[in-house]
Length: 156
Image (cartoon, rainbow, N blue to C red; front, side):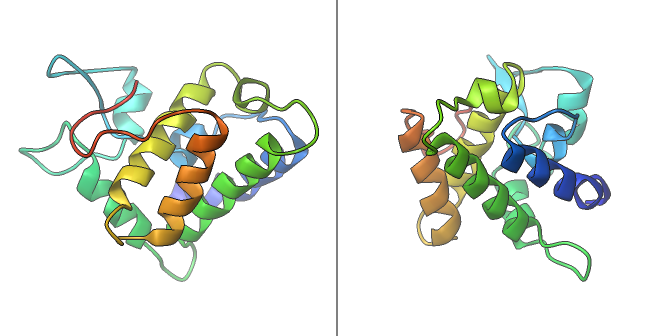
C-alpha cells in the first residue's frame, strides 16, 4: 500500500503523457503468482509484489485481488486508483495516435498489464464489481485479448 500510495500520481502522469518511464508497475498493475505446471515462476520482485491468497491457495490471487479492490483508507483507495489508471491506459490506446501497449508501457510491462487486467476482470465478474469488470473488458476488447478462464488459469 505504501509503494502504491507513493508512486500512483507519478504513474498516472506518465501514462497521461504517453509513456511509462520509471519503475512502478509492480505495485500498480498487480498480478497473481505466475504458475507453470504447478510451480511458481518469475522474478523475486514478481513473487514479492504479486497478489497472493493465504495458504493453501498461495499460488492463486483471487481472494487477494478482491481484497485489493475493497481496500480503502484515509490515504489511498486502491480500487479507485486501479480503475482510474486502467481508464487512462484505455484512453491512450483509443487516441487518434498509434499508441500500443508496448509503446505506452514498454515490452516488459505490457504483458504484466494484460495479466493484471485479466485478473481483475475475472475476479470482478458476477456483480462483484461491475465498474471494474466493464473497464477491464473494454481494455481486453481494445487490445483484442480474451478474458481469463473462470478460475485458476493465469497468463504470464
